[in-house]
Image (tube, rainbow, N blue to C red):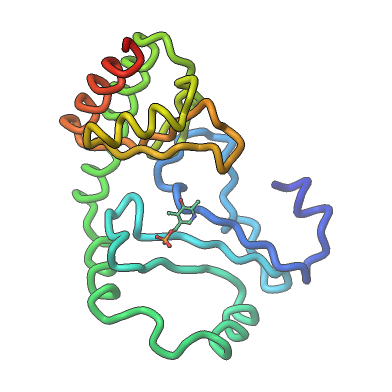
Length: 188
Ligand SMILES: *Cc1c(COP(=O)(O)O)cnc(C)c1O
């Protein structure tokens, strides 16, 4: 991050998408806010869609220098975030128990899925977020098979990972359902 910032001039707008930052435990993960300066066009984007579980309300936020935010205010739509979403976001951000529970469900689900995927003999990419990339062979086929059985994951061909699927950590029931359907499919 520091190397990158050193290579661009401060007037170049750098947008840092931190949709998953609340989940991260890796000490090397850069804190973009610590690089924020009035004289640097750095905009940090965060969302209520992941950890807080409010994706359907379409609300997130940006943090940046006053000058940059002022320019955004001049061009944004006047009523871009509705009142219900704002109230829900305010309630969620102050709800430490909700956040703790959400992190715990993710951590436990991640540990469980990592272990079970390894048991199935499949490669996986270690993750700091709320999803795992699993190498299943034919990602598109496994995606369709899972879909037919009522489990929705994401095929990754569009990202040039046609041998992988991406699975989001769910509740413990959802996670074990995913594993048993996946096991059945790869043993076919
Ligand atoms: C979810 C997500 C966002 C934010 O999505 P919204 O629901 O529009 O707030 C941004 N970037 C990435 C990579 C995401 O996965």
